[in-house]
Amino acid sequence: MTAYNATVLRTVRITPRMLRVTLVGDELRDYQGSGLPDESCRVIFPGPDEPRRVYTIRRRDPAAGEIDIDFVLHEGGVAATWAVGAQPGDAVVLSGSPAGKYSPPPDAAWQLLAGDATALPAIGRIAEGLAPDARAHVICVVEHEEDRQSLPNVTVDWLPATPDAAGPALAAAVLAYGCPPGDGYFWVAGEMAAARDLRRHFRHTLNLPAAQYATVGYWRHNAEEWEARYSAVAPTITTRLESAESIADDEEYFDAIDDIHAEVGL
Ligand SMILES: Cc1cc2nc3c(=O)[nH]c(=O)nc-3n(C[C@H](O)[C@H](O)[C@H](O)COP(=O)(O)OP(=O)(O)OC[C@H]3O[C@@H](n4cnc5c(N)ncnc54)[C@H](O)[C@@H]3O)c2cc1C
Image (cartoon, rainbow, N blue to C red; front, side, top):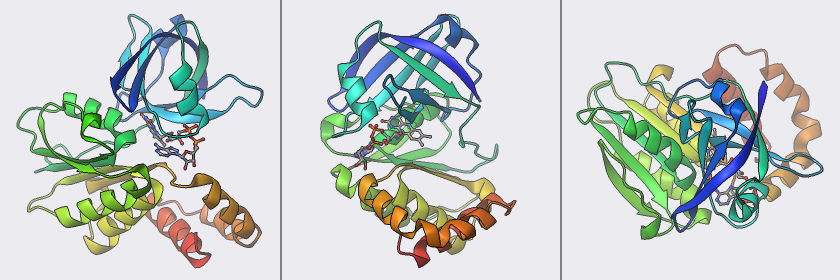
């Protein structure tokens, strides 16, 4: 894990609820990313306990030593609050190792990119890298019409939902989309419960091989309430969670974690 010092160069409100923060720093010239369009990094914010959150790298310009991060401006939260008040010269640290899961089979007949507002930076970067004939469709849940963004090379269904309802709306829309003919590829990112349910759908209902889908939980609805419930059951599941660590296959590992969580009502 490498750490990179950076400062805010500028901020731009790209839609009412999305703020683009351009970071700059000599160390960013050597940022070691995966190069995948959904690559992410940890942002370490100033403060006594150095809070950190994961964000997508929306744009990287090694020659200029710049990285763009698009922050969803939701209620509360260290990161969203920091972004709203960010001023040129403010310091943050990025840390990370090569990350990202977008990896469609080269001969994919179609792609579905689905997510909520937090997935828009990755979807935007993925779309920009696609050929116009890639046969890629986007399903994106945003709160208001003004939260939509222009996305090249894809067709888009925008669905309105408040953040509280974003997870269920995303899950329902992807289930309703079904699975078009031919070997395609699903990429889903957004609220944790939706990402978890859709992973199980792809693997256990559609019986897709792992190469044909990627799901990533980006944020948790009512995180504090979930964490309180987790703390209450942690002593009873810690040993089982630890023993799941020895499962080598990623999908089998996620199945095991889902099962343990489901048993205790998480
Ligand atoms: C790989 C990856 C890439 C990501 N990329 C991006 C990105 O490019 N842009 C982006 O905005 N986010 C992105 N996220 C999501 C981001 O990390 C979370 O939303 C994070 O919780 C925000 O931190 P915070 O300090 O603002 O809020 P927290 O302190 O984590 O949470 C405070 C409260 O806000 C709620 N909350 C958290 N996020 C949201 C939200 N988006 N909408 C509504 N309520 C929320 C929580 O439930 C909690 O109640 C990504 C996450 C991952 C794992």
